[in-house]
Length: 517
Image (cartoon, rainbow, N blue to C red):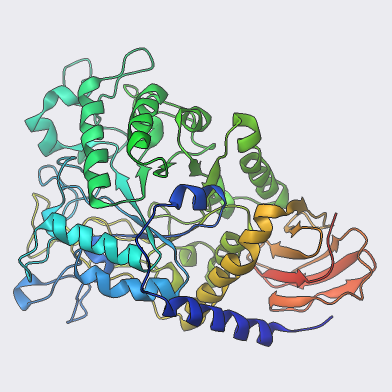
């Protein structure tokens, strides 16, 4: 077995340098939808309010009275070169709509408590320029485009209490006539989008205004927050409306095959497949459940389901690798650093679109020492630094996300380049092949065309080592194997590889001249 890992890393590093040198891009043409449906998007979710926050005193909170600056559209531009170097080709911007301040959560207000849908959050405006906030947003988006980075924006599912007070006709009322609080989201109220028989035209108009506003800013896609809380008929009309302006506009539904319940007894519930039929290009594969899966069968069943969507629906569809999102705990708190590595390489090898949250690549655990303590100053009616433990902050003017794991950051670059230059093209033209193992905790799969293959093997047990034989049809054991990612070296044999895996270890191997059938 030939170990050419060093040569491969040199090749990838050169590819990164060459690709990052060409920042002077031509006029932007939106190709995000095509990129997504080809599983070649590498998406990085950011909160503009914290993306380049200037926490100079290091206390984790932005102290405006000390001259510190929270993240805004203009200072966020400084981080785009870094994303380009990391291999990111799309960003998902968490909501940029104005946020509510009444019955709020956190000292800045939740990004998802929308106080309006046809304007921008004034918190994201830099005061160090004469440019309007719209001009600043357009500049940020154009700068992303110039670096080959597409832009997806988030449309919130609900309205803030402030918006309810202004326009109560837009909201669902309970039997007593009060606005409905969905789930346990006390800072928002449920918008009334209607049902499959009758769409609420007022809410539809609100969302059409949002679409027009975002398209005028130059965005490439929209991620629909809690998409299953609105009827398919609503989404179909809205998506059809948007596609008349930009056929390449990506629509990503925050919905999953494992979510079965409405957010309220007063809310509609639309299953993920009906959302895809309505026009969404993709949804959240239930990979966030991997932390609970005990066997490789559960993992492979999810892949099988996702791969069947296009055939089932008769039109191209895809999925994001939603192993970790802003709603999920940092993988470091779930299964340690090896879980981050597994997420990284699965995003880079599976036939899906890679998806990460700001701070993942440097090992942020999103533990804020000030969380849920009383604040000396607030910009809402909440006097506390409300925060979700282990999740990126979306409620306060807080520090830039990030950790200090340099090795993970380097692997992030390598894995993304591997996806761009090798696995995405091979996934597009090759066959996905589940490989049998004799250990239920060990998964293995291959992707192969007529000339070459790559193999991925992983240990789903994060507490102990595991051994397994991985069956590879017609493998002789003397083929050249390029080791991309391993801690331990597999042993080649006739028709199989024998592996001893550390807890949560993932291995990626390339068979450069051996197709698997």
